[in-house]
Length: 409
Image (cartoon, rainbow, N blue to C red; front, side):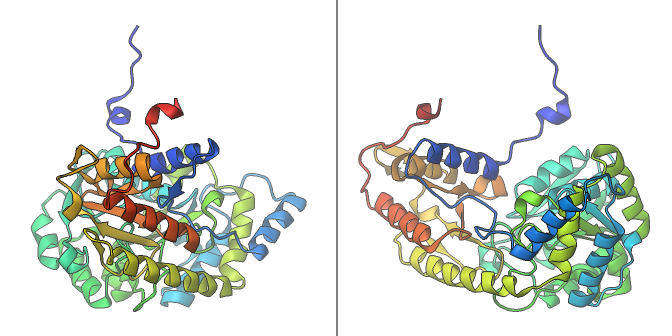
């Protein structure tokens, strides 16, 4: 008997970043000395004041259902945060608290897209965007930013991609996977085009606090018209090292926020009550942890960029935010390595994992060819060891195949 799976489910691809991280962790569990550059989460612990708040919530029995779209206390904390950081005035009616940034994005696309609508998606893009758009029965329309333009699209590309079916533009700054940041001037051009064409801007600023040069600009600050069209998506995972706590939020016009809350009420009910309580402390409490984390990331980033650019065949640009380097590997592709033709970034990452025991993320999952993403949300020792192994691999230093997939069976 054939078991049926829906066409929608069958069309969704698994996350390549989570797949590689899962394989990396499985290898580590087996005692294989693998080095991982794949994970998109801080290697810092959640700050103590936030953990204490969660313990207090448990001890005070704050363990029941909350309103589906989040507690008033956390919504108020998000409003205060937005006012403090951007000057934007929101009320709790504009805010939806969700089970992480991914959940906020999924809610967003479900609420703004009808079947056949188009969502403009700049590449390189975060791997989950196109799948989320398709899950909402919409169509991702890809525009590719060139490396010469720091992987950012141009106003002309955006204008050319807009059709009568265009419903929204996704804008992620700082970017995963490139670490690049859109300037206020670039965002002003984008805002003008969005307003002229009455399209939403899904503004994913999950890495907003991790900017090392320049300033973060929220596109909603550039005028009342673009503010009404902007859905701000953010969360606590990256800024406060709270990836497993699963608290994200969206800020939008009240009509859209209500619709998002309605969908969430049937899909998941409320976000975790304990994590919400801790999130209030994260947003309202001591923030010096962020500066300390940024200093560490800058040190790692600078070392990684300099080292990559010193290795024959590899190059990368200096990222201005997040914790990723997007490494150009085009010079080492379409060549024979260890008796095997390596034509794609995916094949290169497979062979480097098997021979040099370094886990990397190939760029195909980000919508472009010829690049590899490395995360520097890992220790300096790990970074040095991993880059040493990559250089040794490219110099022909791994004649023996150290690892094969069947060892995981």
